[in-house]
Image 1 (tube, helix red, strand yellow):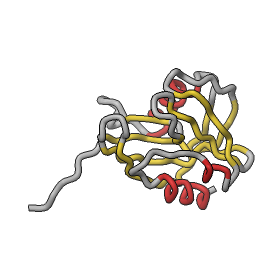
Image 2 (tube, one colour):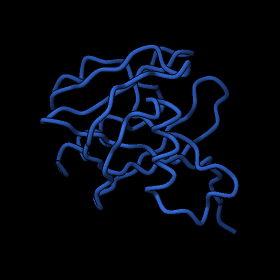
Image 3 (cartoon, one colour):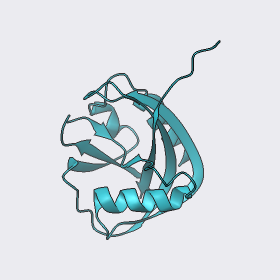
Length: 139
């Protein structure tokens, strides 16, 4: 019998505007990440657009609008606070408009040019570097 991996599943947005990618800093760990989060119970049959709209409103404020594109990538990370493994689906999105108002989950945000993110601290035990390189190749 083969091992079956068990993951929490999250949907993240690689939001691009004028050649820059939006990253947010977690308030509890200080690590940088893409905005978005868990697919909640009951959302399994919803489209990515609806889930991302909810997550972006929660994390960046109800004023921010994005347009998800078809391109996607994924990554696996281990949450540093409890060791839970998370499978993240990352959708490339275009920033439409709005003013960012961070939720208490995040302490800062930054629009990064293609190489700016390399100086930021990302969660250990994750392949964020590969995923961000992949996201930039889709832009």
